[in-house]
Length: 136
Image (cartoon, rainbow, N blue to C red; front, side, top):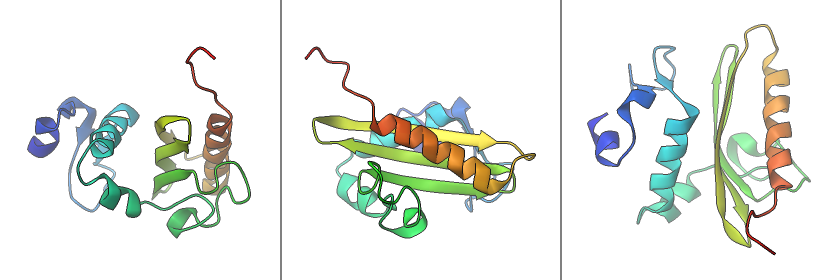
């Protein structure tokens, strides 16, 4: 907590109960996760951090997600899974601008995990269609 606060990340946005990430007592807001992603993007260790992230349609836990779509090879993100909870947080690369940082956390025990993942992937695919806000 102290290290994250030193990096400028609001400590009220998360609670760390253990280091595993598997405890339901660990909490983080999507905003705090995006703050961490922003810090890491501008960090001297950015390349190492990026290399640790699965890539949509290509590697790791995203190997079979968003394959043969605009997200393939452009989304570098970490998944999160607990019963009734699915999350995806990371970067959407765009060759014409800095990456879009995102964190999507869905918590709904009444919906299957597969349906939650599908909803998250739909949101990410819609994000790949976004355009720059800069004047053309």
